[in-house]
Image 1 (spheres, rainbow, N blue to C red):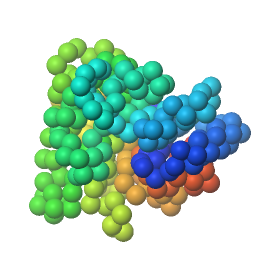
Image 2: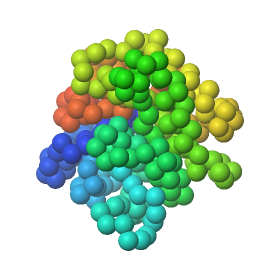
Image 3: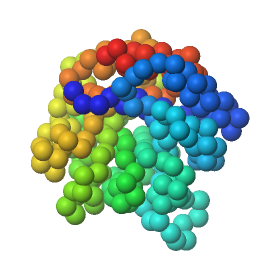
Image 4: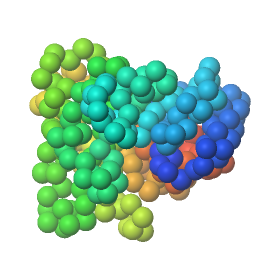
Length: 257
């Protein structure tokens, strides 16, 4: 088992003041405990700089929810990896299912973003997962392999230079549906991701530089079960990360796992 990660995706759920207050409370409460888990918070774009100021010097790490694939240019509304680096981001979500669904983000776009982030030494958190239709059609493996292969295609055209990356398996069909995923399915998906990584970049590189985590309706009840799955070393958390009490409960669970 490698280093564990707990990544909070605040999405567009919090105001500027709420984001700042939550970050401050997490800083204060994390200072009172000991954990080997890396804790990452991903606020919305407009509050990145303010949250960066709040968490500077603490154990919290800063992540972004999106990035473009160029560092400069006429790309209205986008944010560059270089800007994220200046803000203090060391992580960035890429290919989240909501961006794929609502904004038409493709596997090829994800691949360009991953490569650009790595040039700035920002760890990409690559989100992959199957829809309910894809699951029902028996296409889970096909979808995961395609998403992961295209996400890393641009990055692996050059020799790997030791950059770390995270793959978050997020079964889209489970999110907000009330359905549960079996541990065996999580383990099978983690094994498939590892097998695909071994073929893309060799087992030595994958074992040393890639972490596989789980995302999808993670809460205080199911986190321990997900972390006990072979091949899973962390979680990407949405709604349960929006209050300090709930998120700190997750931190405590992860620290014991």
